[in-house]
Length: 343
Image (cartoon, rainbow, N blue to C red; front, side, top):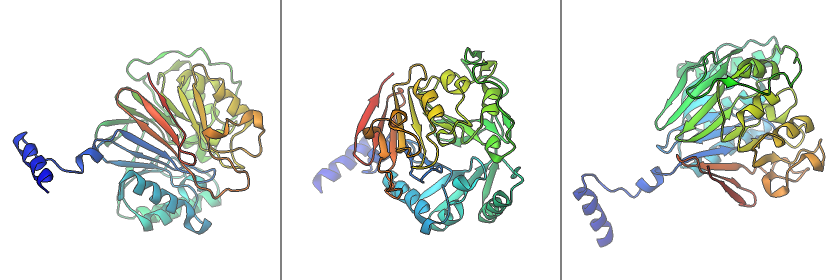
């Protein structure tokens, strides 16, 4: 008790109150890549304690995915979601939102605007999502706009089929990898409408383009690279070959990539190899062992959160802790294997 009073008095003398919670609030950036078995759900918690959840995985499965998100939120020390960003309206991204909203309060919903896909399933999932929004705060974002989070810069790279029109500061050089991916077919699905974002925290940069497909990747990245390089890349579209062009991945030059594949979804050998061969890549991490691939196109087990082929419900996550100087640590929450990457 005496020690606590001394600390309080010292804090007051220094012009402010010392609070035991201050150390928790001084954490760096936290990112949780949550296992939603081939869908997407990425929880971002700023050093100031604000939260951004990108997608909520599938609905159903007895509410397993929303519960995993809430569990990640508890580990991160948050009790509500400040921003719920939906990249697009496919079931593996938006399906879990209605159940999640019953478990944890969501302040603001963020998306690219109306559903554009001619599909009964997608129309149904979009309608369910709209019901959840109700009278809540709602942001529809366009390329070049952003999300106001203290201490972070979050900018939209792609949304509703459009892309960034002007290069970011320090970017805009010719992309040497354009022309190496052939001529991808037009994609009329919601994937091509994905709301993709770039997060910057000091010198640390993380990009997540949802399920953006190759033709839209090339439109974004060619002939000039408007983004520059990144430290951390969430492999697009769960590691499917419909996405992950060399013009995107190699030009971004990530130091680390994380693939949010499922045991039997994503992790395609072609896309896996493109990411693995990216110039300067130090490591690729996977949420699941890709059963439909082979051992040559899966990383070492210590880099895989859920390596058991017949145990889809293990539910282990991958966590990233980043500092403003660009240093970040990736941790496999199954085996607690961690690796730190410095500039």
